[in-house]
Length: 58
Image 1 (cartoon, rainbow, N blue to C red):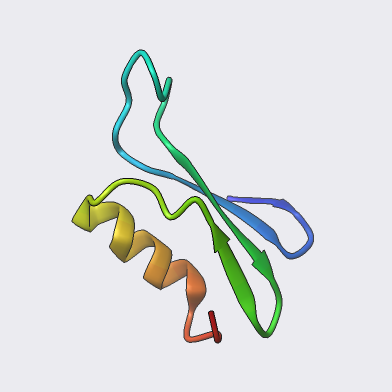
Image 2: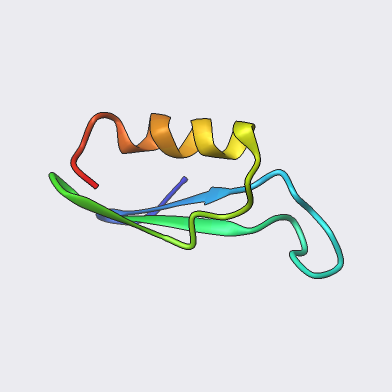
């Protein structure tokens, strides 16, 4: 989900009392990106981050 130009949020599927709806990871940048809080070790979330990176340099 794009929350601002060049900033996307990916919510991990790990809802709990501590994470509410899930851990939020952020992808920031256009050509080169950084991933802020890559989240839990959950294959589904990792794959969502890879899809969102879309081949860009991390």
